[in-house]
Amino acid sequence: MTSLDVLIVVLYVTFAVYVSYRARQSFLAGKEAKRVQERAGLIVVRPDQVALDRGLEEQLGPIALQGFISIKLSSGIALDNTLDLLSLTLENRSSTYAVYINWKESWLTNGQGRSRSIARITPNEGISQNHSMIPPERTLKEVFTVMSDKGPQPLQEALILHPLRQSGAKKDPKSSVLLSLSIQLKAVSQFSQSHLLAVSCPIEFSLPGDDEIKAWQTLLQQKRMAKAN
Image 1 (cartoon, rainbow, N blue to C red):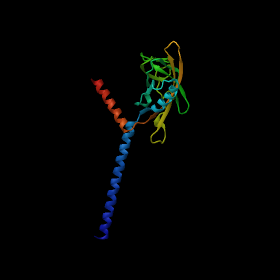
Image 2: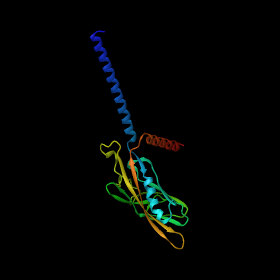
Image 3: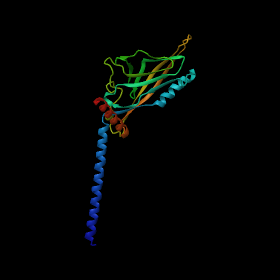
Image 4: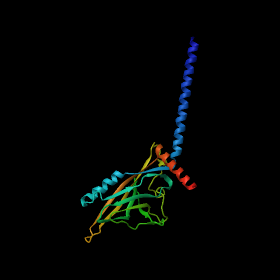
């Protein structure tokens, strides 16, 4: 093999490696572009349930009610610019206390310290800050939103949740708010004992991962099929 033949082989191999490299880069760029498009406008809601449970139990322990009251916040995926509702489920396993949620003293606060009062959604889809009452050995689910005369207001419009797509160069931008709930326990006995609880829970908002996008797409498909039927 002459030196010219060697040079041709080297050039061929170099060109083949370069073409392969560019093809791979193009494939990865296309895959990332598709992923970005799929994530656009979606947001994942993740409450810190561990912190909520811990804070609640610390306050229930001194009054011998540990394990008798539980609060669960919903998690899931939604469209970020229309996200206006959150929900909680309060289970009262006590046989001697009724539980009240004081919505007028409950808040959502973002990382910049901006707070907005919250209100529950009524059965006729209005909003109210009247107390929610959970009798002994009962469970109640409430849907709540930022307090507004206009009805449910998207968290972005309420300046509580900042748009994740405006988070600059962060690869996985996140935003968070702190939910603060004012809870009152009232004994149903003739002694009328009462206890006040201040319960808080961080709620994180982030862009969805691949599995969450697939779950969202499956949910949309199921809704379309149900609507078609």
